[in-house]
Length: 423
Image (cartoon, rainbow, N blue to C red; front, side, top):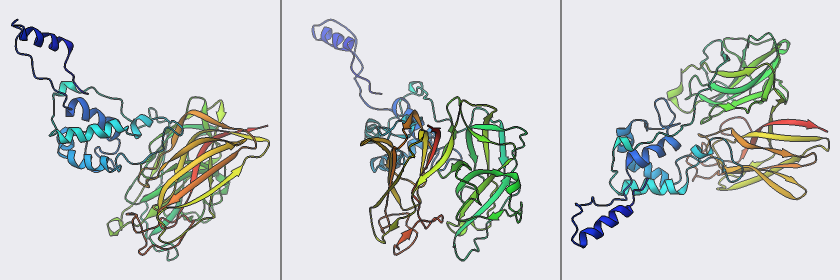
């Protein structure tokens, strides 16, 4: 916060010039200080990742460490690398956008503070801000993989990738609805993603082994389109549904984790994972919502292409409308940007768009739901960087890349939380 010369000081200075003793006013200052300006900024935009146990480098809740890293923070902010890319709230605003998207004024303030010598100011100047809440307010149900699992990465057809499905009993005797969800990521260094889906208990695979799970690449073991209830990828935060909304789980369903493990380097060999999920639940809701995978698989990304885009979409039936409450865009490490929008009678309505960061994948819960009438069209466009300028490139030299579930393959999805309204 800037401090400006007050009118009272101007008056005292004028009196002094006229020979009236007024004392010696303090020299005015407009410098930014850590406690007044930078610490609130860090708590607003940075500490959800840069905290003890967080996925970001450095603990920005530690004042001395944050100040020591000031130049490095400034360089990352100036480069547009931090905070990491998120959906543009001007497309469609979403819960927490004020934390996830840093305004230009804050970027400039970071540089001004560093250029000014990183003055600290006084701790009393700090005004706490409401931070992103990383935990559920209430946990009614928790499920965890029954046994720890150590990937072997021995599938020659899918090198460095392993997909295992693990069944978890929810223990409920009546049908219920999920209203908030938070993953428990057992070993983040191993886990590329978690897909959580439901399936009837009497459809559990006959060859299922609880200790080692079941190989389930290229699908979720037969679960239908209505089976997915949650998804996690790096950077994701808890998903909270508005009051009256919920995803249904039947008493005779089981919940199944599809765990995608990725061998990012020798340091993960021998590590074991035992992930899970926490939920807030209720026995009745006003509106049942579903997790619907909207996306495409018919793309080929040319080798060496620095910015290759592919457009897809589909039209709603004439008897089906959709209300969209939130969206989880998902690509892999070649992902550069995405755009999702609805089109009705030639009018476009933006749902989600932004630059993409594999390490910061979020479910964006809209502040205002988006309604698409029967016959409306949903479009999705993804752009990838399959050139050597991509620091996350896996294959050197770059190679032609297609749709697939492996980390070195690609995806283009917007997993959509929506209710269906049949006419």
